[in-house]
Length: 254
Ligand code: NAD
Image (cartoon, rainbow, N blue to C red):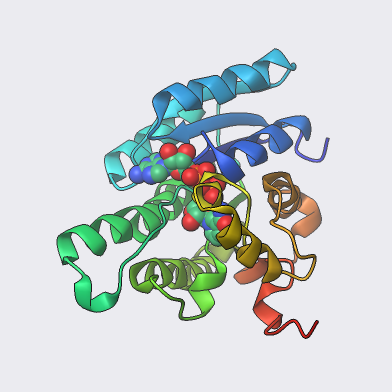
């Protein structure tokens, strides 16, 4: 129960990494807010957490709209009295070769969600933590692609690199308020983003990691819960690689 007495909001909480993290945070004693553009699944996740004795509420949010992110933070405060942790995790993936881009389709919408959405989460939660006068934790989901070039990922890589940059700058700016900021870089996680691909591509993705398998969402959730806890107080302004060795691994020789 490392998070007893804490209130945590997770964007992209209706699926995949966000959903698994909400369950883990609730098991650790946090009261949780499931925030997602997919209202039905957000309510399903909150109900499933309550069914096993947790404390959860759902809120519809498009992270690309600042007023909605602020409203989600206020929903947490109205429901549970405060906010202690935000996990800026909502994201969309995909991409085309650069020269085939239509900027209004292949750049702007993804930047709005994957980059600006994280900025809005940092801003809205940071303002709430300062209003409360309590310490807070801001964890944001980048990606292995945030630190490298990758095929068909021009926009996604840029947005995920920005998440790392935001985390460094926000940690620096907000440390005086007792606010800690961390980015995580998942590798290949078995969520709907990856499960949509055929078995051959999934096997290729698995082979890029040292244990030769896709990561389970629960395995990412365990790290996020630790980062959200006071046990991680010394981790600030940095990137935690949750990629099963992807970022240090280049070639399998067998
Ligand atoms: P997912 O598709 O299971 O979950 C993403 C969630 O974000 C969905 O519930 C979706 O409804 C929500 N969402 C999308 N746009 C939104 C918006 N505008 N406002 C609010 N919610 C929105 O995928 P996932 O794999 O769990 O992805 C979670 C995060 O992890 C994303 O940021 C993704 O880029 C990142 N990531 C995933 C992997 C992987 O291998 N799965 C690897 C690296 C990074």
